[in-house]
Image 1 (cartoon, rainbow, N blue to C red):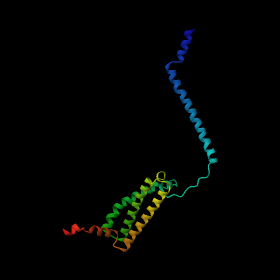
Image 2 (image 1 turned 180 degrees about the horizontal axis):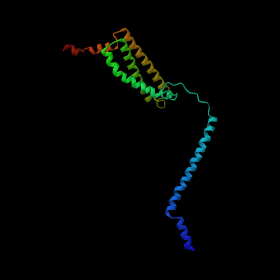
Image 3 (image 1 turned 90 degrees about the vertical axis):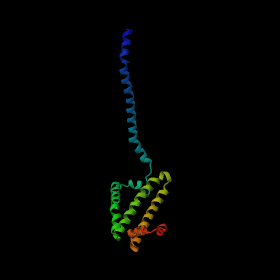
Image 4 (image 1 turned 90 degrees about the horizontal axis):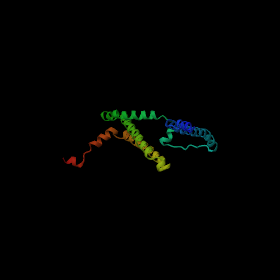
Length: 182
């Protein structure tokens, strides 16, 4: 009789059964925990929504906030690449055949290319979580003002002086004191 009890216990307590029971038990408890958390997640947001006040969205000019507004970044990326590739053609064309149209195209392309580059730096390095909420907005507004002023100054130079490409050519033609003595 004791032998039969021992054999029955040995069948239940062999290594394979111990491994199976060890695998099944934690999985059952884990799945129970996951199911309970999922049930709470469905019910809890409804309770939070009743308590939470309506959210008022602040006006922002930073790129991450504007991204949430649903703008298309792939279109902007494509336009940036077109402008960058266009600069490869506009710069030599403006110097080979200077005209007000090519000078204006050069001025617009260079200013907008520079604006997008500096804007990326402002958005990357002037994060509100690091420097606060005011400084990124001030930096972005200052960038817009500087870009508009630069473009206006270049247009004034193109219209009322020799033009952008000819002005750069004249600047390159200036010889220093050492070059004049030789």
